[in-house]
Length: 276
Image (cartoon, rainbow, N blue to C red; front, top):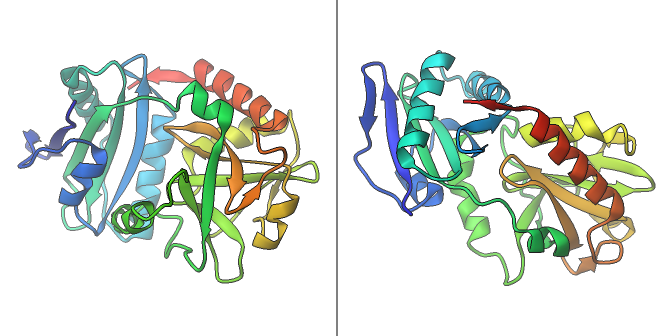
């Protein structure tokens, strides 16, 4: 099923002058100098922490020096109508704001399918990319939406995604996710130099009942001593990582504490869904 695109303007909702097969395909029509956020619906018209996504959109605008004025009720209403019109069981949607037209919101939706039970049960393999830390990482900007395509298009067979490393060899984040490692009984993730994800907020909320959190990035030299690892994003939740480069993590299967965190994450999410 193709993606659906609308543009919310000061004069109302307009159709886009292009068609696209997916969010990824639609990105090629979107500006390189804007900001955006992406998440999904559950039970067709419900979302998780949408206001947190809009908070981050405003924060990204400040960091990118975009004069954004966000009318949240109006934006929510236009987004909800597009989701209803699209008719998907659940939708994955992106809100994009161009730098030179900050009063126009590009709304794009596609059918949403969460990671399969089989993928979660097996975990995923990832690779690291040296010297790949993002500029202005705490802003969710569209230039990265375009730049990351170069990384994702060259992933080896069997590799799910890539992790970005700074010049000193610390693992910062995934190309579209936050990265975490469990080592010596601590949950480790980078505290700076990354985009702080909305899913990460949920991980931080539930982790304290399972293991202590340390905002300290894992170094490449420590990969062989990691017990468990996972990535998070709004559309994936918690997804176990079982291999980094050519190193198996722990037993090479999703770890017990990762799966406990995932169960706690899902329970928290179920209790906090709200209508768009």
